[in-house]
Amino acid sequence: MVLIKKVIMKAKFILDLTDPDDVRQLKLITKAEDMSFVLFEVVYNLQKKARERFEIYKENGRLPDGVNDELDMFYHLLNQELENHNINVDEL
Image (tube, rainbow, N blue to C red; front, side, top):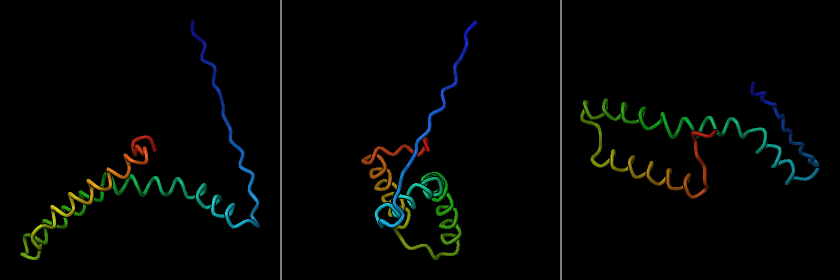
């Protein structure tokens, strides 16, 4: 029989809320989850939504040439930046 011991890890942040830098740190800490949700949405869902909308514009003859190429370039650059900063959205 294998027993698995659960380890609970905690972190404590001590911030001086009269210090503007610490206030900024607090905002970063408290908004990190929201930012990860937005980043996930941008990486995985926004491109699909944009392409669906582009199809409607294309059907109506209102889609400028090269828009899809520009969207591809934007996502290529976005993914490059994520990689440069070692951010794996799947880990968020």
